[in-house]
Image (cartoon, rainbow, N blue to C red):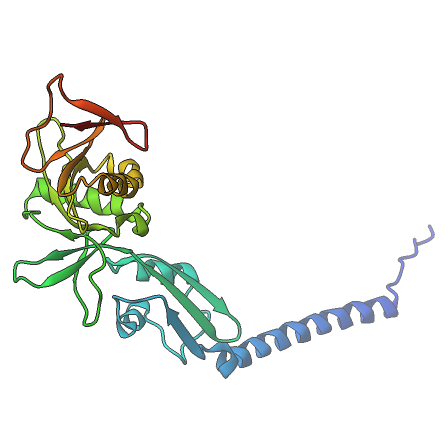
Length: 271
């Protein structure tokens, strides 16, 4: 009778070790689940405070309503990116940044479009104009320290031109606009974006929205030089070339006109 092959037997120690590992893994998973349940039911997982800053034109209560969360809600119920998108629904808000700091604190920084000008509305009251063209009622105690837009009738062409102007004004250093009291449209066939600026120093400036950022840099020095020469109450033209003339005089085109160099190398015409 042939000999039977011996079958190796499992070591009792190895089986017990494998069983112990499985038990430890189940206990570990159980405790993780238990801790997660306890965490999400505790006050540590909830929003304890929401801080909002930077807003001037949008009331804090409206922002709180728009974000849709409040102290006591779950901290992880919504992401910072989702909150930022909700705040962008306000037309005066250019952007917003939201940071969540555990445990339970949410910080919201609101960046509204800057104020660039003022304008009288149809009722004769003053509105403040933001960079994106939004008009808001002037608040009590607010100083009118920016140009007033006048003559901008409500039509599609003028509104588009005003939107271009407000965007341009936002890119200019406010200090360069301190002497400008009023801006009016002065559209022509040659210059569809031509405007007139009136200064507090009693000069009338003709330029275009496209030229404005470049020309406004020289305007203050230009006016200073003219005052030094007792050339007051004049019209300043700042287009391809720069020159000045009497307010009631036609644009000089004759050969008798004399050219005077200005700060930016352009020519000024004098009579």
